[in-house]
Length: 70
Image (cartoon, rainbow, N blue to C red; front, top):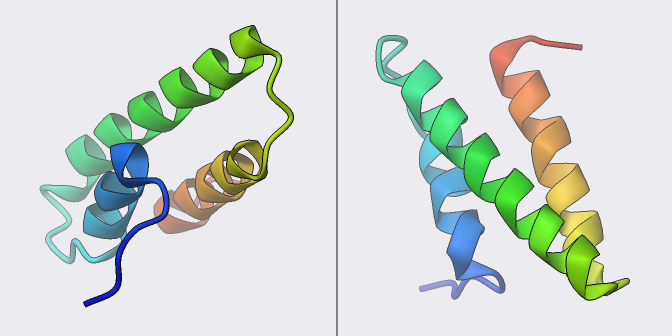
């Protein structure tokens, strides 16, 4: 099975993308976005310019597409 590069938040992202129940999706999106933003803030406070920061930005864009927000 494929191993996640950033399991702290990518597992939540995967679960939100694969959620097909419209009743459950908003909560999963909210949890995922919170985890992504928290990790991004942690990386920013460390002063890290990393590949993970770009992955986090891309993940937030995916969440916007998933919820139809542009």
